Length: 125
Image 1 (cartoon, rainbow, N blue to C red):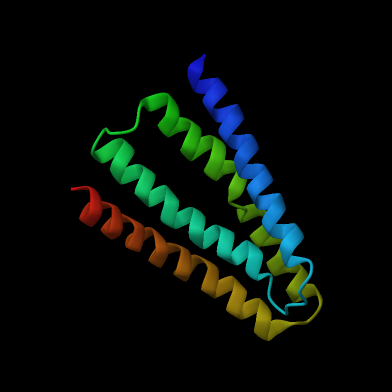
Image 2: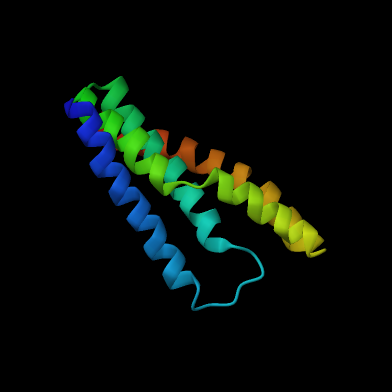
């Protein structure tokens, strides 16, 4: 039961964090949806840190770890939005921004995940 409460509460925080970043980004006109890009990259980085500290080192209780990974990061990250926004850029014939966004998101996300593993292992080992 604690795990479900953790997922729900932290998921709510992840969703609200995502919403807040989107509201701020609406004030700026950008050719690429940088807010989604940044959220996915940050989410990849944070998932790696939670993995190292929570799973490899066992320093985060299971219910909190699940709440962070499934709840917060599940509500915060936005792969479905990434897919739709890529399709919309393609639909607008914005091929350059679409290719940068489409290729840049997984490459930088993976890079952020690797950096998160390194940072967490360096700082918390």
